[in-house]
Amino acid sequence: MKVLQVQHLQKVFFPGTENERHVLKNINLQVNEGDFIAVIGNNGAGKSTLLNTIAGTLSADSGEIDLADHNVSKKSVAYRSRWMSRVFQDPKMGTAGDLTVLQNLVLAQSHTNTANLHWYQKKDDVKKYQELLKTLNMGLENFLNTQVKYLSGGQRQALSLLMATLSQPKLLLLDEHTAALDPKTSQEVMKITDEMVQRKHLTTMMITHKMSDALKYGNRLIMVQDGQIKLDVKGEAKQSLEKEQLLAAFA
Amino acid sequence: MIISSLGQGLLWAPLAIGVFITFRILDIPDLTTEGSFPFGAAVAVSLMIKGQTAITASLVGFLAGCIAGLITGLLDTKLRIPSLLAGILTMTGLYSINMHIMGKSNVPLLNEKVLTEYLPSWNLDIQTIILGLIVTGLVVGLLYLMFKTRLGLSLMATGNNKEMSSANGINTDGMIIFGYMISNGLIALSGALIAQSNGYADIGMGIGTIVIGLASVLVGEIFLRGHNILTRLVAMVVGAIVYRLLLTVAMSLGFPADDLKILSAVILVVVICVPIIQNRIQTKRQLKKYLQQMEAKDDESSTSTAPTKGILSRD
Image (cartoon, rainbow over all chains, first blue to last red; front, side, top):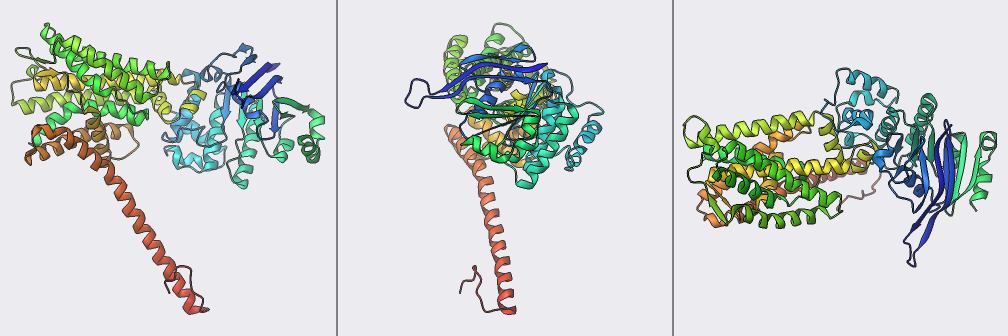
């Protein structure tokens, strides 16, 4: 069953000027339920533009995007968030720093049910979120009433990840979400990501620059180059890929 | 003097809270303040002259401010006009609207019953304090409750991280408009209260109100710090009172009434600079302490091991 269908997606930056650049050239992509896709590509290849266009932060010049059987091509980020969650590259982007850990989690939990006059905190919230935070193994359960800005980058990114998966999205977008972390924390967050995706059976698209992560995680790999999908492998074909083959494909 | 400042400060407190909502919660510098404050005054005074009660007039003044906020909000979010310019545009437009409402530049309240007259006939200062406490208490209480709901949380989240908020399904444009409305509603309410306290509405009474509001916010944050929303709201009330007290002290030193605006500006500069200077002094102290510790370590190592000189050695 398909979760995301992208058809003939095109995006041009600075049209009509000498800097005109075709960032997405007639992209077609189908993402099926349960897919965990690693998206790789050079800087400027168009992978982030593709993700931003799917998320709705950038509008495509032409093409259609169907998400969970809804045409969302012209819809806002907030509308798309009914079926989609996102973890940003910058740990600060995915959380509200001035709000507490608990308030951030409540926001992510209420999701499409925001902005009404119900009390945001319920009786059993503290216990429920403490249990959830324990699964991250970062000691965050002891900081429920701490403002998120005081957390480390790794803790903040793990929290972003937990928030993004709380509402069981149809599609999870990970935009180089470990790139701003130190190698050790990056590994930890990647491990948590994989566990979460497996446990919750989340359909996921993950942009990464780390070839090792692209090969290790997920059941499908997409390489974007010059605004087009150059490589799309899954299953055994993906498992049998070698780092050298990928590097050669980059050339 | 203190009693009078307390009463006046409480009447100005809704303005401080209004500025706090846009400036601190939404992180937007909103200049609509200078138009919505006299707008509230003009609407309330005009209605009172036409026979409406002070309570109705004040409430309609609040609603008028909400409409002013709505206009700035729409200009900002729907027409993508930068917030600073959107505020200036509404403020400028409101000048003409206020003139139309009042019919002339100054409208006095002569025999109309103002809010303080609904209270038992105590001393006027005491009446002002009681009225201020009732209005400010209601405003703080209702806002505190609102910030405990998902609506309030969404408002805070939008101001703090717009991208994250929309990614979590919040209609951020709607939240920004709502914030502008509440903020300017409170500012207009303050205008309505001050007009009744002064006994007139004047076309120029909005000049400098953004400075008064910002100064109250900053003074309040010097006195009361914390991320709890109730503490922050109470800090705004304290800020408004202390700021009024500072002005009263300055005036009692013999400054003429015409210097009130420049005094306001100077107080704002001081309250902005004090935390910066405090931080600089603290950083210098910490650096000095750190260097002394490094030098001490350096001395220890040079006496105990080799005659090498440390990087921080002055020799």
